[in-house]
Image 1 (cartoon, rainbow, N blue to C red):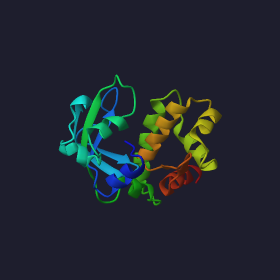
Image 2 (image 1 turned 60 degrees about the vertical axis):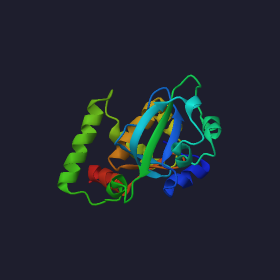
Image 3 (image 1 turned 90 degrees about the horizontal axis):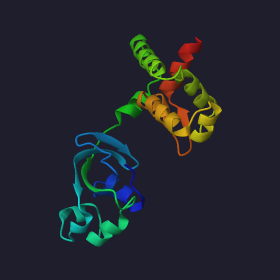
Length: 195
């Protein structure tokens, strides 16, 4: 989930704990933690609501930092035919485990074995090996648009971005405003392949 403008600040400081979203289907799951541009949030509940039945006096309107029900409806984006979801969440305090993992440049033998096994599974589930090639490409062209990186590999952008997200989840890459770069862990992993 992304939060725009003052909503981002409101979520980051804990003032906003509710969001209304118009989606074809729910994109978040109760109990899961999601990384957002305002920090990590845990979903407390998600349910479909009729936007026409939202009332000015609903506690959720205030928790979403909206002036009234009309303001909630005015700010809904997406296809009007899609259902509206009411999402309750709370900010998750503490360090992001993925960021801590990414900062680890010292790979033990066990770390390396586990990482190699995971990347091998990624390669086998694909139309050929891609993990090492993608990591080396990101290393050689940091902060390059995903579309340009994908094109240099003769790949479509959307599937390429999904694959890079898998590498990010292993702590190997960072997402930048434009493109990606290797993490200390990603750099350390590539160094083991050339040593």
